[in-house]
Length: 232
Ligand code: GLN
Image (cartoon, rainbow, N blue to C red; front, side):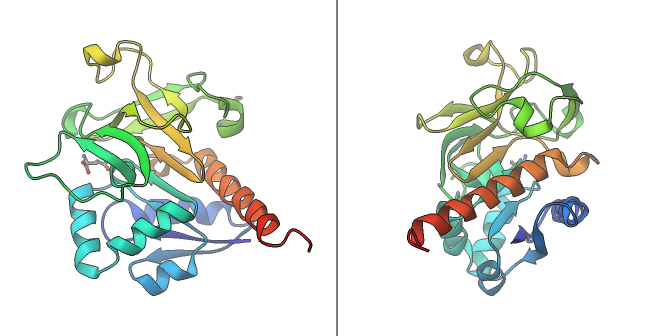
């Protein structure tokens, strides 16, 4: 079973905690904890970095002295960044404040901050068949029901800088478009044990993306166990 942490420095962390708690009885989760310190980070098997404000989260993490620990964690253990969390995970961010901002530099993509406009331009969209790549819609949401994707001053993934990054969800054309993205913007990717999503599944009552992350983390645990101890 897994202990899952949610980085709780700023932003929508409580909502992720609630979503994970509703999965506890069915999904091999032994504990769900708020992470603010290195000691708490050391307790968890997988981590969610929530939405909020990526510059603030980075600044607070730096002041609390856990930015480097988060970098290390994201590189080695299952980590999911939603919205601001996706920006933090990325290797490169564009449309940042002057002088740039600290990133964890773990997910080889370029994200464009606030790609869909300001807070008032927030929107949600129901999609059922936009998934690409070999992790199909079926494995994430179970096909039956479309999923409600919520975007709040969201980033988009504007370039993928490693062929092992798997595209999961692309928006239909017409949202936050630039000439460079005429066939729709990429808003969810998987990279080894990392998941990055522009949207906020924790703001819906639908826990399918959380379930997907937990299962992905569990699969990682199992394969790690096999690798460390091949003869067990
Ligand atoms: N625009 C925010 C940022 O750049 C992200 C918004 C969100 O997480 N909902 O950090």
